[in-house]
Image 1 (cartoon, rainbow over the protein chains, first blue to last red):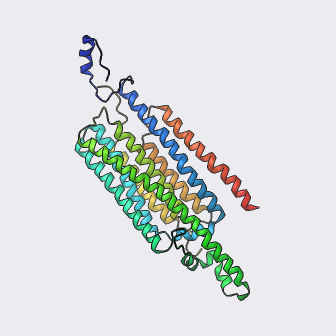
Image 2 (tube, each protein chain N blue to C red; image 1 turned 90 degrees about the vertical axis):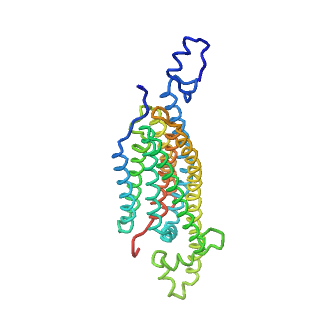
Image 3 (cartoon, each protein chain N blue to C red; image 1 turned 45 degrees about the vertical axis):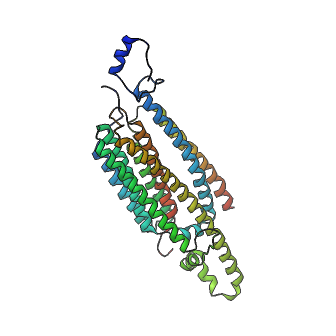
Amino acid sequence: MSDSPLVAEHEEHTEHDRPELRHHFADVEQQRNAASLGMWWFLGTEIMFFGGMFCAYLIYRLKYFHEFAAASRSLDLTVGTLNTAVLICSSLTVAQAVRAAQMGNRKLQVKLLLATIFFGCVFLGVKAYEWNNKYKEHHIPTFDFNAKDLMQDNQKLFGLDKLEGDPNRAGELRKKEDDIQKHSQIFFSLYFALTGMHAIHMIIGVGIFSVITWMAWKGRFTPEYHTPLEIAGLYWHFVDIVWIYLFPLLYLIDRRPGA
Amino acid sequence: MSEHTGHIVPSKRNWLVFIILIVATFLTAWIATIDLGPFNTVVALFIATCKASLVVLIFMQVKYTSEKMTKAVLLFAIAWLILLLFLSLTDYSSRFAG
């Protein structure tokens, strides 16, 4: 807030008193647009950050499609779908919280923000449950990784059924099994890298929203000024979008029955 | 006070987007179990892109923003991403084919 030395101006100033308006902005709207644009720039860099991993995924998926398909089938589709729904619920509560701030409804804001944090935590909890299952199934790369169950469940996909009965092709079979053991680890490496980075973003998001909820509780947001809530919301929606792509790319590679 | 506080999205529209997103999620999971040949991936990514567009346009309010730079930043970020993925794809897909 710029303090004018002129008393005459000072009187006029109190009428439009805006403690949230920084002195280097002309008005609240300019400040809001600048903050929002800054967040969009950051999200642009985030697209590049995740884009690099998506690109690595794309290349290896092309190269080792069967291993990727088999490994993808070992993920729990029901749990993955429901967790996607949980994340979409959290996006709705964020959008509605921004709306509540625009309407000046403090109690509703706090409730919706608490719901967002709740859904975020549920998502992370389910993710932890899924990771634990991968641990139990020996599907964590390098840590006692074992792809035997993937070979068992996907005999036809890998063409192992044709090799198995033939004693003359035992060497070929062993080589194929070695390859599957090696290459399916690449899928799980990417799975843990992508879902792990996504989970870290979620944890940071829950942290940000804890602060935002506290600010909302204190009544810091008015219909005229609720920029922190808005730009935190942008971040949350972005993390949701990353998952919207991760879900089909990791869970739905090849679920066709009998293939 | 005549200051802009951002476009207030009607509550109904948020709920509508939410319902579409939920339905699309279950739809894409269900379609994945149907054999469409190579089109399974195409359909899954198409649905994902529709969902992401809805989130960007309505929840993130890009549809309502007066700030043109926001749209520019978003479009350029997507363009760079497509450049990265598309050029890598053309390179690697032609290598494995040979």
